Image (tube, rainbow over all chains, first blue to last red; front, side, top):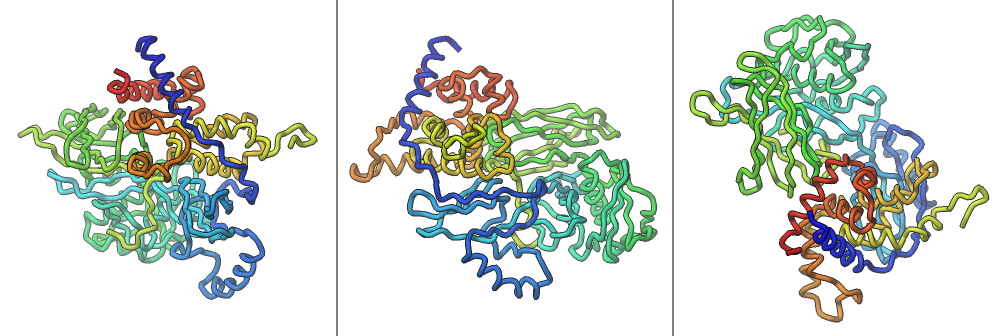
Length: 376
Length: 156
């Protein structure tokens, strides 16, 4: 870029900034409170005596419903908030949220408050049926999003695992969860290498959809549990006892299960770099694959179905062994794109075992795993 | 007000930086939403738990403005431009709107706008822009390259 172009860029910036309006007045009516905990938990916002009265009136209702969990349906937002409620300088009342910093404006001229639910980040592995599948095995894809906390300490730090057992888990189109909603986590403990997940009795029945479904369920749970903290394996127990007969074929799970335990029951291409909310940033897509000559392909497909970018990467192993692959997708996303990861058939060159993942363009939090009832 | 410890209170901080923050926000989201973005960003910053310990409050507020601006959909500016172009003279704002500039900037993402503004308006070096935006220097250069590419037609 020449100096002349630099001057033009500077002129453009100056002309842009020259349109600046007068700064808004200092929002003097702001009531600022600070969160006490570094780990966000469900919080009710207090903003004056009126709300205190409302809260007192609501106590019997909360008690009758079994205690402190906040009904997501009753909340005005599922975003993490700094518990700030304010009256805007203009004739509107605004509830300001922190992550994502969305703003809800309602026609009112007086200060109002709303119960606020904070959310927790969660990474979970969902299941997808790949296109043009060679083996018929499902693909694992890591998704990042937010969940409402379970309100219990045991879920803290294991939000993704908790989400998989959550009733009403929402997953984007094309993804499924093989963990039945009857399965509950009773406790999670960890040492340096192994996470022990204690389940209820419903876990023993497996996925309820046959042996492949059971393997897939285990893969989801193992990958989700070990996605953080450098853990190598998961030991499942039921009511504290070892599991010696799991699912439709009575699998013995009495030993810790690593990520490689059921690899061959997966699609040849899997994605474990959660894709979401990258805006204009370059996008990292990584995963593991077992494909011909270790060559993994990637396409960015726009909303009209046009391939707008393509790339390939070489996995660390291939043609009979599993290897890691990674892409750095340098593309200006505008919304509604889909990332497709696959390998080209050695026979006819067609895309095989294709995994398709929608890119969330403008939401830094990723998917909302809780806002849409019903599991695909 | 300056407190006994010499630390500016929130109002003093706000009054010190409101003008430049509004200009920065104008560059990011256009003149129509700039005031709202600044207000939201300041509320967000003032209510942050670590705000009392923040040493460089100006930089923190710049980051807050970018964060809030990021949550504005790109379509917002486009919609506002359409509304402005069809608005009756009485309903138009008093400030001069440079539609050519806004039309060009609309082609950029908020991240690209921030990189352009911090580089060419604030005259910051790439390393400082990267720190301000919380991204790598390479990413700043990519944003600038893309911005230049998008603006090429307008600049020619």
